[in-house]
Length: 134
Image (tube, rainbow, N blue to C red; front, top):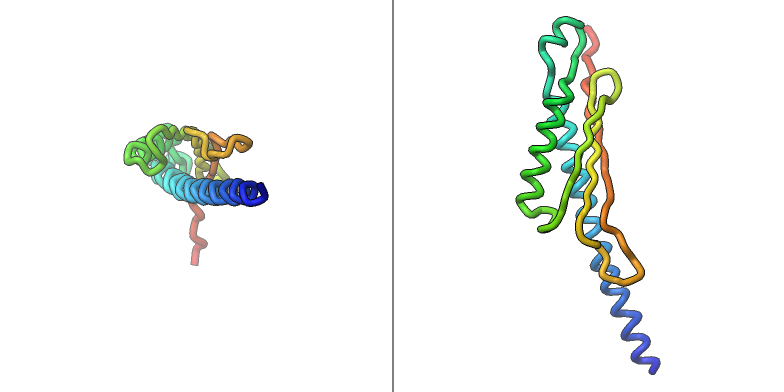
């Protein structure tokens, strides 16, 4: 009886260890994707508005479209699994930057019955910093 109990406990520990490793891997991938989305959105500069105001102005609509396209390509490549969905929110950050917040949703990441996690989010920001006059 004790042997059976130990087998069950160690089996659950192995399953949890495997699941948590997959969760950490997905978190790292989502963080890298959030950084890429923030960088892509920050590169969408509105030249006319920037010239008119004398400061760098980022076109958030074009930036959001670029980030969504990047997420669509990444999800379709299968990097997050077959039933993954990633939503993107692009917002202004600082005086001339953008913040990308990505929310992953999909299958339950844990196989144990008492743990449930089917969505998590990561965010990243990218800000242009002007060089000081020398």
